[in-house]
Image (cartoon, rainbow, N blue to C red; front, side, top):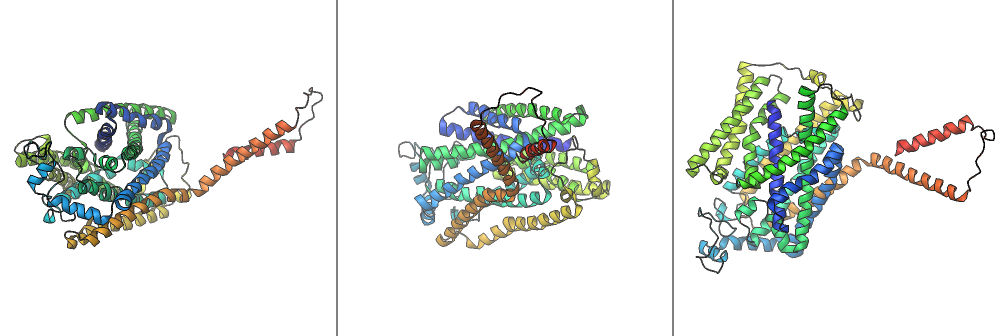
Length: 561
């Protein structure tokens, strides 16, 4: 029950971020009321997810991801190849940080005077990208030596550890795939996904700062930087592209979250505690009802979050505080035979309580009062995230090592997995071979650890000696982001088709055979006049062999289709 609750929290937080950012973008680009957009967006997910289920989600995710990456590489091309160059963006970024505070106030004012400036908010914090960047090396944007960047990076790692371990959508996708495909797919998926923050931020993110577009910090927190830059560069066409990209991302991720919640309710609550004898049809009905109810609830919940003054950026930073404490206990339960189940429950809840206390105390100490603004600073959010993940890990280790050590035999795990209607479709002998499973585990573990080490440790460290990037170094950085974006787009578009070529070939062949046979039958029907009906006495018996041949032919065509 404990980790079921954490799973629900992860689904709610992820879906909240989708709707908060999505509704804000729709309102900014189209003028549609925020509350109306928050309520209408989930229906795009509800309609096809409740009808198509997990298979529809997989197919839609592939198509949507192709469209997302098509828009991504379009934006990269426009910023750094068609309209500007890396050298121009470099010069613009240096110009942005060269302005003094007074000059920035004049630039962001209603009539060109300091008195009418809206550069600072009521708390005397700057709202726009102008002037030197606090806590950055030489106040520059062109550096990896950034205190705020480091804090955000750590928060990002903790929060995304939480989603990967706790979010049911990751688990069900892995379970639905073949072991070897899941191992390779998740590794390649992580590499391709990195193009979204890396390539998109390097293009649209830096362009917004370089061009000094009037985007306030609150608007940036709502995820309005990409649509603002796209609209500035392409006008209505740019707005349309971002809206398409946004819709694809929301529907793709939203459908996965909806399926995750429905499977948790249908299998882990309804079938486990309410109706253990439930059939597949009954479970499917429950899943569809949950999808509709969850979509309606999330629409209303996102409206409530916005009314409280919480935006996409705030919720994103807060994510690790809520679900980070479940990460290490779950990791231990899956990999450590001595891990205690009771200790995992105690550690998860204790970590959450300690994280919330540290988060609130940090806001009180730093801001002298507990408000949405003081709770959302990088320092306060960092403290909550770190307390959540490390305190739970320490508590679980101590409890499992010294209080309640176990000796679980992982070979007995399969015996406790009960299938509905014993459906083993897609699970051949190879997929159940323990040697194959062990090989897949070793394959992903080695490469996963290596990739994690390179991206989290090696890459940032190698960027430190550069200090403030020179123009050639920045050009290399831009080239790398462009190559990563295009490589990811090609990989994620072509590789699934290549791996599924046999299945796609069978389907196309079956469809072609069916169409050709139908055309031949129609041709014969047009050319040959219908024979007069025979009486029963006039009918000749159909030879048994010919009849069997005809039945076999119909069977083959049906199987091919």
